[in-house]
Length: 114
Ligand code: AMP
Ligand code: ZN
Image (cartoon, rainbow, N blue to C red; front, side, top):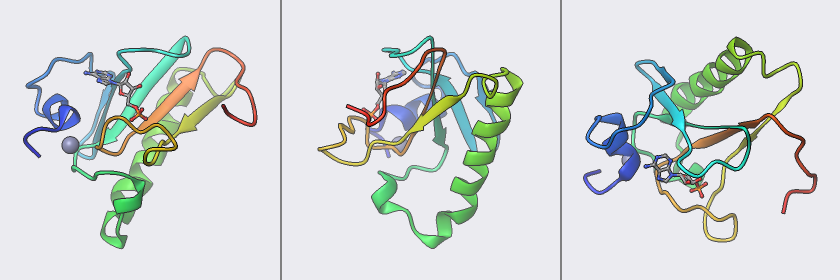
């Protein structure tokens, strides 16, 4: 996906502070943080959104969730808790069309979300 900003981060064409990397995925800080900890976790495979997942992506997304959980624990974020957010499509406010999960922590979050 030549015009995908997150694919360019995966390929290190666009710089980002890589906080975690595996053969499956990478994580880097959100450029516009909305919490003291705001990290984006993305699979290396270009998948447009949650809506575009297929059963072939089962392992990729399953592994990504475990990677987020392990990373959060490595930062002791499970002590106070954290929120994982995926925005899918217009009404949810998705702006980058390479599936990603926001890891948010370091403050209390409202429910229901805005
Ligand atoms: P979403 O609105 O769920 O699609 O989230 C996209 C997120 O990507 C936003 O929170 C942006 O601040 C973030 N973002 C966009 N470009 C970059 C970048 N080059 N590096 C880090 N985060 C980015
Ligand atoms: Zn992409």
